[in-house]
Image 1 (cartoon, rainbow, N blue to C red):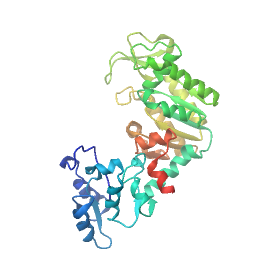
Image 2: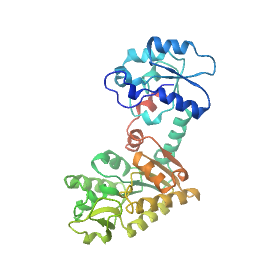
Image 3: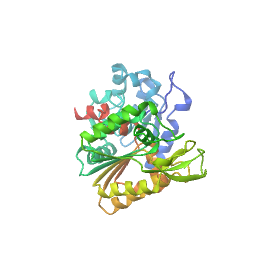
Length: 341
Protein backbone atom coordinates (compact mmCIF):
# COMPACT_ATOMS: atom_id res chain seq x y z
CA UNK A 1 0.00 0.00 0.00
CA UNK A 2 1.19 3.49 -0.94
CA UNK A 3 -0.02 6.73 0.62
CA UNK A 4 1.04 10.26 1.42
CA UNK A 5 0.38 12.32 4.52
CA UNK A 6 0.79 16.04 5.17
CA UNK A 7 3.31 18.27 3.43
CA UNK A 8 6.76 17.28 4.74
CA UNK A 9 9.33 19.78 3.47
CA UNK A 10 12.78 18.26 3.86
CA UNK A 11 12.67 14.49 3.63
CA UNK A 12 11.62 12.12 6.43
CA UNK A 13 9.84 13.77 9.35
CA UNK A 14 8.58 11.59 12.25
CA UNK A 15 5.39 13.67 12.66
CA UNK A 16 4.35 12.67 9.13
CA UNK A 17 5.27 8.98 9.38
CA UNK A 18 2.65 6.47 8.24
CA UNK A 19 3.62 3.90 10.88
CA UNK A 20 0.59 4.72 13.10
CA UNK A 21 -1.59 4.28 9.98
CA UNK A 22 -0.36 0.69 9.63
CA UNK A 23 -1.70 -0.12 13.12
CA UNK A 24 -5.03 1.63 12.39
CA UNK A 25 -5.38 -0.16 9.03
CA UNK A 26 -4.74 -3.52 10.72
CA UNK A 27 -7.64 -2.91 13.13
CA UNK A 28 -9.99 -1.89 10.31
CA UNK A 29 -9.26 -4.82 7.98
CA UNK A 30 -8.82 -7.39 10.76
CA UNK A 31 -5.45 -8.46 9.38
CA UNK A 32 -1.87 -7.66 10.37
CA UNK A 33 -0.26 -4.88 8.32
CA UNK A 34 3.53 -4.79 8.04
CA UNK A 35 5.38 -1.50 7.72
CA UNK A 36 8.46 -0.50 5.71
CA UNK A 37 10.47 2.52 6.85
CA UNK A 38 10.88 3.77 3.25
CA UNK A 39 8.87 3.65 0.02
CA UNK A 40 11.87 2.79 -2.19
CA UNK A 41 15.37 1.34 -1.88
CA UNK A 42 16.75 -1.33 0.43
CA UNK A 43 14.27 -0.91 3.30
CA UNK A 44 11.31 -1.28 0.94
CA UNK A 45 12.91 -4.17 -0.98
CA UNK A 46 13.69 -6.04 2.25
CA UNK A 47 10.13 -5.62 3.55
CA UNK A 48 8.61 -6.69 0.20
CA UNK A 49 10.97 -9.69 0.06
CA UNK A 50 9.68 -11.01 3.39
CA UNK A 51 6.01 -10.99 2.30
CA UNK A 52 4.10 -14.25 1.98
CA UNK A 53 0.89 -14.71 -0.05
CA UNK A 54 -1.92 -12.77 1.63
CA UNK A 55 0.40 -10.46 3.60
CA UNK A 56 -0.20 -6.69 3.60
CA UNK A 57 2.56 -4.08 3.66
CA UNK A 58 2.31 -0.29 4.01
CA UNK A 59 5.28 1.66 2.68
CA UNK A 60 6.43 4.91 4.32
CA UNK A 61 5.04 8.31 3.25
CA UNK A 62 5.75 8.78 -0.47
CA UNK A 63 6.15 12.53 0.08
CA UNK A 64 9.35 11.94 2.04
CA UNK A 65 10.92 11.89 -1.46
CA UNK A 66 10.86 15.04 -3.59
CA UNK A 67 10.32 12.82 -6.64
CA UNK A 68 6.76 12.07 -5.52
CA UNK A 69 5.26 15.53 -6.11
CA UNK A 70 7.55 16.16 -9.10
CA UNK A 71 6.37 12.87 -10.68
CA UNK A 72 10.04 12.11 -11.27
CA UNK A 73 10.49 9.11 -13.63
CA UNK A 74 13.42 7.80 -11.54
CA UNK A 75 11.31 7.79 -8.37
CA UNK A 76 8.44 6.17 -10.30
CA UNK A 77 10.82 3.43 -11.46
CA UNK A 78 12.09 2.89 -7.91
CA UNK A 79 8.50 2.56 -6.65
CA UNK A 80 7.48 0.24 -9.50
CA UNK A 81 10.02 -2.47 -8.62
CA UNK A 82 8.03 -3.09 -5.42
CA UNK A 83 4.95 -4.43 -7.25
CA UNK A 84 3.51 -6.18 -10.29
CA UNK A 85 0.25 -4.27 -10.84
CA UNK A 86 -0.97 -0.82 -9.78
CA UNK A 87 -4.43 -0.14 -8.34
CA UNK A 88 -5.44 3.45 -7.61
CA UNK A 89 -8.20 3.62 -5.01
CA UNK A 90 -7.64 7.24 -4.02
CA UNK A 91 -10.02 9.48 -5.96
CA UNK A 92 -9.26 12.20 -3.40
CA UNK A 93 -5.71 12.45 -4.81
CA UNK A 94 -6.69 11.97 -8.47
CA UNK A 95 -6.38 15.69 -9.27
CA UNK A 96 -2.63 15.49 -8.64
CA UNK A 97 -0.20 14.19 -11.27
CA UNK A 98 2.26 12.76 -8.73
CA UNK A 99 4.42 9.64 -8.91
CA UNK A 100 2.13 7.44 -6.80
CA UNK A 101 -1.12 8.83 -8.26
CA UNK A 102 -0.27 9.09 -11.98
CA UNK A 103 3.31 8.09 -12.81
CA UNK A 104 3.00 4.45 -11.73
CA UNK A 105 0.02 3.89 -14.04
CA UNK A 106 2.37 4.57 -16.97
CA UNK A 107 4.86 1.81 -16.07
CA UNK A 108 2.70 -0.95 -14.54
CA UNK A 109 -0.58 -2.61 -15.59
CA UNK A 110 -3.03 -0.15 -14.00
CA UNK A 111 -6.59 -0.35 -12.65
CA UNK A 112 -9.13 1.64 -10.64
CA UNK A 113 -9.97 0.24 -7.20
CA UNK A 114 -13.53 -0.45 -6.04
CA UNK A 115 -13.84 2.81 -4.10
CA UNK A 116 -12.55 4.80 -7.08
CA UNK A 117 -15.03 2.90 -9.29
CA UNK A 118 -17.96 3.70 -6.98
CA UNK A 119 -16.98 7.38 -6.86
CA UNK A 120 -16.67 7.70 -10.65
CA UNK A 121 -20.03 5.98 -11.21
CA UNK A 122 -21.69 8.33 -8.71
CA UNK A 123 -20.12 11.40 -10.30
CA UNK A 124 -21.22 10.27 -13.76
CA UNK A 125 -24.80 10.18 -12.44
CA UNK A 126 -24.29 13.64 -10.90
CA UNK A 127 -23.03 15.66 -13.87
CA UNK A 128 -21.68 13.33 -16.57
CA UNK A 129 -24.95 11.83 -17.79
CA UNK A 130 -27.51 12.96 -15.19
CA UNK A 131 -31.26 12.53 -15.12
CA UNK A 132 -32.76 16.00 -15.61
CA UNK A 133 -33.68 18.48 -14.24
CA UNK A 134 -30.31 18.95 -12.50
CA UNK A 135 -30.00 21.40 -9.60
CA UNK A 136 -26.69 22.43 -8.03
CA UNK A 137 -26.35 23.98 -4.58
CA UNK A 138 -23.14 25.94 -4.17
CA UNK A 139 -22.25 27.77 -0.98
CA UNK A 140 -19.20 28.81 0.96
CA UNK A 141 -17.46 32.02 1.81
CA UNK A 142 -16.02 33.44 -1.39
CA UNK A 143 -16.89 33.67 -5.07
CA UNK A 144 -13.17 34.01 -5.88
CA UNK A 145 -12.48 30.42 -4.78
CA UNK A 146 -15.28 29.01 -6.96
CA UNK A 147 -15.19 31.04 -10.18
CA UNK A 148 -14.29 28.03 -12.38
CA UNK A 149 -16.91 25.95 -10.61
CA UNK A 150 -19.73 28.46 -11.18
CA UNK A 151 -18.68 29.03 -14.78
CA UNK A 152 -18.81 25.29 -15.52
CA UNK A 153 -22.04 24.59 -13.63
CA UNK A 154 -24.21 27.23 -15.32
CA UNK A 155 -23.65 25.38 -18.61
CA UNK A 156 -24.47 21.95 -17.15
CA UNK A 157 -27.34 22.39 -14.69
CA UNK A 158 -30.92 23.63 -15.00
CA UNK A 159 -30.88 25.63 -11.77
CA UNK A 160 -28.09 26.88 -9.52
CA UNK A 161 -28.76 27.75 -5.88
CA UNK A 162 -26.12 30.12 -4.49
CA UNK A 163 -25.77 30.53 -0.73
CA UNK A 164 -23.20 31.32 1.94
CA UNK A 165 -21.01 34.42 1.88
CA UNK A 166 -20.67 34.14 -1.90
CA UNK A 167 -24.38 34.91 -2.32
CA UNK A 168 -23.71 38.36 -0.80
CA UNK A 169 -21.37 39.18 -3.69
CA UNK A 170 -24.12 38.35 -6.20
CA UNK A 171 -26.69 40.35 -4.24
CA UNK A 172 -24.37 43.35 -3.99
CA UNK A 173 -23.76 43.10 -7.76
CA UNK A 174 -27.53 43.60 -8.17
CA UNK A 175 -27.51 46.69 -5.97
CA UNK A 176 -28.56 45.08 -2.66
CA UNK A 177 -26.95 46.72 0.38
CA UNK A 178 -25.40 43.90 2.44
CA UNK A 179 -24.10 45.94 5.40
CA UNK A 180 -20.98 44.49 7.03
CA UNK A 181 -21.54 41.02 5.56
CA UNK A 182 -18.70 39.04 4.02
CA UNK A 183 -18.73 40.27 0.43
CA UNK A 184 -16.23 40.59 -2.43
CA UNK A 185 -17.40 43.93 -3.82
CA UNK A 186 -14.55 43.96 -6.35
CA UNK A 187 -16.05 40.87 -8.01
CA UNK A 188 -19.42 42.50 -8.76
CA UNK A 189 -18.62 42.59 -12.48
CA UNK A 190 -17.62 38.92 -12.43
CA UNK A 191 -20.86 38.01 -10.65
CA UNK A 192 -22.87 39.84 -13.33
CA UNK A 193 -20.92 38.00 -16.06
CA UNK A 194 -21.77 34.64 -14.45
CA UNK A 195 -25.44 35.63 -14.27
CA UNK A 196 -25.39 36.64 -17.95
CA UNK A 197 -23.71 33.34 -18.87
CA UNK A 198 -26.38 31.44 -16.89
CA UNK A 199 -29.17 33.31 -18.69
CA UNK A 200 -27.65 32.47 -22.08
CA UNK A 201 -27.40 28.79 -21.06
CA UNK A 202 -31.01 28.75 -19.79
CA UNK A 203 -29.86 28.07 -16.22
CA UNK A 204 -31.92 29.68 -13.44
CA UNK A 205 -29.84 31.25 -10.67
CA UNK A 206 -31.60 31.12 -7.31
CA UNK A 207 -30.34 33.73 -4.82
CA UNK A 208 -31.62 34.46 -1.30
CA UNK A 209 -34.73 36.64 -1.05
CA UNK A 210 -34.37 37.28 2.67
CA UNK A 211 -31.61 36.95 5.26
CA UNK A 212 -30.81 36.22 8.88
CA UNK A 213 -28.73 39.12 10.19
CA UNK A 214 -26.62 39.29 13.36
CA UNK A 215 -24.22 41.90 14.70
CA UNK A 216 -21.54 39.52 16.01
CA UNK A 217 -19.98 36.48 14.33
CA UNK A 218 -20.52 34.05 17.20
CA UNK A 219 -22.83 31.21 18.19
CA UNK A 220 -26.23 32.26 19.56
CA UNK A 221 -25.62 35.94 18.79
CA UNK A 222 -28.84 38.01 18.72
CA UNK A 223 -30.30 37.93 15.20
CA UNK A 224 -33.25 39.11 13.12
CA UNK A 225 -34.78 38.12 9.77
CA UNK A 226 -34.85 40.92 7.18
CA UNK A 227 -36.01 41.34 3.60
CA UNK A 228 -33.22 42.22 1.20
CA UNK A 229 -34.39 45.84 1.01
CA UNK A 230 -33.87 46.36 4.74
CA UNK A 231 -30.46 44.88 5.67
CA UNK A 232 -29.04 47.15 8.43
CA UNK A 233 -25.78 48.95 7.59
CA UNK A 234 -24.11 47.57 10.73
CA UNK A 235 -25.44 43.99 10.38
CA UNK A 236 -23.93 40.80 8.95
CA UNK A 237 -25.86 38.23 6.91
CA UNK A 238 -25.04 34.85 8.51
CA UNK A 239 -27.74 32.66 6.95
CA UNK A 240 -30.51 32.77 4.38
CA UNK A 241 -33.99 33.55 5.71
CA UNK A 242 -37.18 31.42 5.96
CA UNK A 243 -38.57 32.47 2.55
CA UNK A 244 -35.25 31.56 0.93
CA UNK A 245 -35.32 28.13 2.60
CA UNK A 246 -38.74 27.48 1.04
CA UNK A 247 -37.40 28.54 -2.39
CA UNK A 248 -34.47 26.12 -2.03
CA UNK A 249 -36.83 23.32 -1.01
CA UNK A 250 -39.01 24.04 -4.06
CA UNK A 251 -35.92 23.80 -6.32
CA UNK A 252 -35.03 20.46 -4.69
CA UNK A 253 -38.61 19.23 -5.30
CA UNK A 254 -38.25 20.06 -9.02
CA UNK A 255 -34.95 18.18 -9.37
CA UNK A 256 -34.22 14.63 -10.46
CA UNK A 257 -30.49 15.07 -9.79
CA UNK A 258 -28.80 17.32 -7.21
CA UNK A 259 -25.12 18.19 -6.77
CA UNK A 260 -24.04 20.02 -3.61
CA UNK A 261 -20.83 21.81 -2.62
CA UNK A 262 -20.73 24.30 0.26
CA UNK A 263 -23.09 25.36 3.08
CA UNK A 264 -25.88 27.98 2.77
CA UNK A 265 -24.84 29.90 5.89
CA UNK A 266 -22.42 29.93 8.83
CA UNK A 267 -23.50 26.36 9.68
CA UNK A 268 -20.77 25.93 12.31
CA UNK A 269 -22.54 28.51 14.50
CA UNK A 270 -26.03 27.87 15.91
CA UNK A 271 -28.63 29.05 14.99
CA UNK A 272 -27.06 30.06 11.64
CA UNK A 273 -27.04 26.40 10.61
CA UNK A 274 -30.81 26.39 10.11
CA UNK A 275 -30.99 26.78 6.31
CA UNK A 276 -28.18 24.28 5.61
CA UNK A 277 -29.74 21.68 7.92
CA UNK A 278 -33.26 22.22 6.51
CA UNK A 279 -32.06 21.89 2.90
CA UNK A 280 -29.88 18.86 3.68
CA UNK A 281 -32.74 17.05 5.40
CA UNK A 282 -35.09 17.85 2.51
CA UNK A 283 -32.59 16.41 0.01
CA UNK A 284 -32.20 13.30 2.19
CA UNK A 285 -35.98 12.84 2.40
CA UNK A 286 -36.41 13.13 -1.41
CA UNK A 287 -33.48 10.76 -1.97
CA UNK A 288 -34.83 8.12 0.42
CA UNK A 289 -38.23 8.36 -1.27
CA UNK A 290 -36.56 7.50 -4.60
CA UNK A 291 -37.26 10.88 -6.23
CA UNK A 292 -33.70 12.22 -6.32
CA UNK A 293 -30.11 11.25 -7.08
CA UNK A 294 -28.01 13.36 -4.69
CA UNK A 295 -24.24 13.76 -4.89
CA UNK A 296 -22.33 15.94 -2.44
CA UNK A 297 -18.68 16.57 -1.68
CA UNK A 298 -16.03 18.82 -0.18
CA UNK A 299 -14.83 19.16 3.41
CA UNK A 300 -17.32 21.78 4.64
CA UNK A 301 -20.17 20.03 2.85
CA UNK A 302 -19.43 16.65 4.44
CA UNK A 303 -19.18 18.34 7.85
CA UNK A 304 -22.51 20.11 7.26
CA UNK A 305 -24.29 16.90 6.20
CA UNK A 306 -22.90 15.06 9.22
CA UNK A 307 -24.05 17.96 11.40
CA UNK A 308 -27.55 17.59 9.90
CA UNK A 309 -27.37 13.82 10.50
CA UNK A 310 -28.11 12.92 6.86
CA UNK A 311 -24.73 12.09 5.23
CA UNK A 312 -25.75 8.41 4.96
CA UNK A 313 -29.05 9.31 3.26
CA UNK A 314 -27.54 10.98 0.17
CA UNK A 315 -26.95 8.83 -2.92
CA UNK A 316 -23.22 9.55 -2.66
CA UNK A 317 -21.04 11.74 -0.44
CA UNK A 318 -17.50 12.24 -1.66
CA UNK A 319 -14.79 12.67 0.97
CA UNK A 320 -12.52 14.17 -1.70
CA UNK A 321 -11.96 17.92 -1.37
CA UNK A 322 -9.83 19.28 -4.21
CA UNK A 323 -10.55 16.37 -6.57
CA UNK A 324 -14.32 16.73 -6.14
CA UNK A 325 -14.12 20.49 -6.71
CA UNK A 326 -11.98 20.08 -9.84
CA UNK A 327 -14.41 17.45 -11.15
CA UNK A 328 -17.27 19.95 -10.61
CA UNK A 329 -15.19 22.57 -12.41
CA UNK A 330 -14.96 20.25 -15.42
CA UNK A 331 -11.18 19.97 -15.17
CA UNK A 332 -9.28 16.81 -16.17
CA UNK A 333 -8.19 14.57 -13.29
CA UNK A 334 -4.73 13.16 -14.15
CA UNK A 335 -5.06 10.16 -11.79
CA UNK A 336 -8.29 9.10 -13.52
CA UNK A 337 -7.35 9.98 -17.09
CA UNK A 338 -4.18 7.90 -17.02
CA UNK A 339 -6.20 4.80 -16.03
CA UNK A 340 -8.37 5.21 -19.13
CA UNK A 341 -5.25 4.99 -21.30
